[in-house]
Image (cartoon, rainbow, N blue to C red):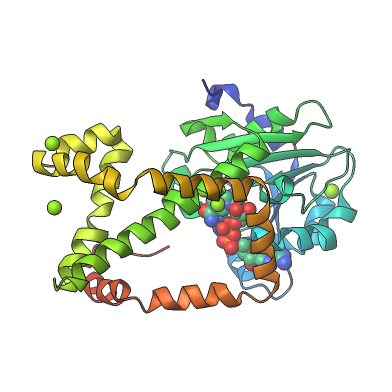
Length: 332
Ligand code: NAD
Ligand code: MG
Ligand code: MG
Ligand code: MG
Ligand code: MG
Ligand code: MG
């Protein structure tokens, strides 16, 4: 059974006694900085001069300095810049400002797990990774709820790094929903696998294949869009609330029967064999190396994939239909 931690298990005063530097002010950065600040934690945000986020963070009442200044001032340094640039930001702005007793924090285990960042022995190395997008982390916090987090310690220099990580997690609302103890390795590998095989990659491929099959067979794209994309939200909401069982309770018996007999024909042994291959490429580091090469080589293939999907007919159909559904918002 996983080790779970809630509000009563975490001591907020630990993080309230530290100087926190949040490097980056994107999806996660803004959520962490604002929620910690609301609890009286001494927070500064580190951003490069000229960053678009600089004015936004200041307007929201935060003090903004450069990443080096933030790292020098802070004794808890949370790196929330995009994973592919973390190693460079670390080398240029953080490494020389780390002192024994400082703590280096991450929101994802990628750079530690795959060896792109190698912190010195005297600092704690911790992770607090919310299991949800940053905008939800902030919204749930403001509503008195929280997004569950997973927390890990890679290096416990001072002997109480996990208590510090739990305290930080409490400061962003994580212990309201529950914090599970993990390792950098488990988090990095399962996070990459989840987004590739199921959450992003598996889902977009499934949705597109279903839509294409209907449209190629001569059905109207608008009908195919509702069947294969729009309704997915309702199904996922039911699974989120009550597992597969609640979803199957809500759909018709005909839909339920079709689920049992056809689902395993779509996601079958060969799909699982490919999932295992994807997992092994994550575990042996080749996915991480290839992605870093692609990123630092100018993102050529990435842009091609992005453009091809932007022009996919499911997107063109969807843009038109969503205009007619004013309640389907995309504020974030
Ligand atoms: P993001 O892309 O939303 O924001 C990145 C921020 O970093 C921006 O404010 C940007 O201006 C700043 N930045 C970019 N280059 C910089 C540089 N050289 N120096 C300083 N700042 C720079 O990033 P994100 O999605 O919040 O991801 C941050 C971390 O959180 C990653 O490790 C990611 O894996 C992790 N994470 C993200 C989510 C999510 O909801 N997006 C969920 C869980 C974990
Ligand atoms: Mg420091
Ligand atoms: Mg994830
Ligand atoms: Mg991820
Ligand atoms: Mg139906
Ligand atoms: Mg039913």
